[in-house]
Amino acid sequence: MTDEQLAVYAILDEALVCHVSYVLDGEPRILPTLHARDGDTLLLHGSSGSRLGLLGREAGQEGLSVCVAVTLIDGVVLARSAFNHSVNFRSVVVHGRARLVTDVEREKAALDAFINQLVPHRTAPTIPAPPTRRNSRRQRCWSCRWPRQRRRYARTRPISTIPRTWACRTGPA
Image 1 (cartoon, rainbow, N blue to C red):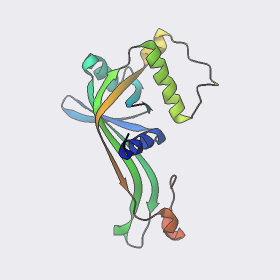
Image 2: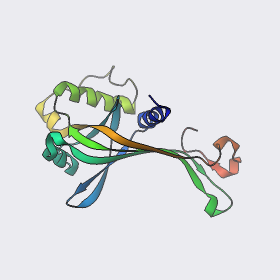
Image 3: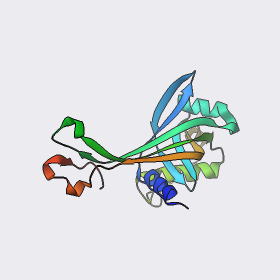
Image 4: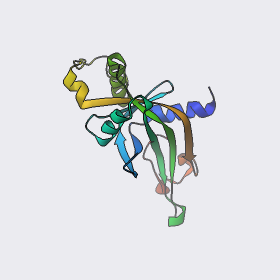
């Protein structure tokens, strides 16, 4: 595994929310949602009644063409000049085809992964949701193997070297 791939995984694993872009009736759409990673597969959470959910169901095994973006803001850099203000960030953009998860066990594992993405190891002490047809109809999981991804980052200066009056931390350094 390359350093680039490890950096992509680290960003996906740290982020809590992603934005899924897709095309509906020739118009671009974007939707914030939960995500989790299972190896090389990105898992996406959504409502079965949402436009994305309906499109995903219609796409079948071919899958729905999506673009998923994740951004982490590490700090805001303030300067004397407005032109020199900046943001330290890390981001990943993934292009792939999202397919509806139909296997009950795989869907349960995906739902556990979403909870554990928000709070690590949270599913162990919780009472599992009963796998009822109603629960399964209300929420959906998609899996997306990505053939292409791109990582971007911007760092002006390490936050620790910026004078206190100029730095505003918004996340981990």
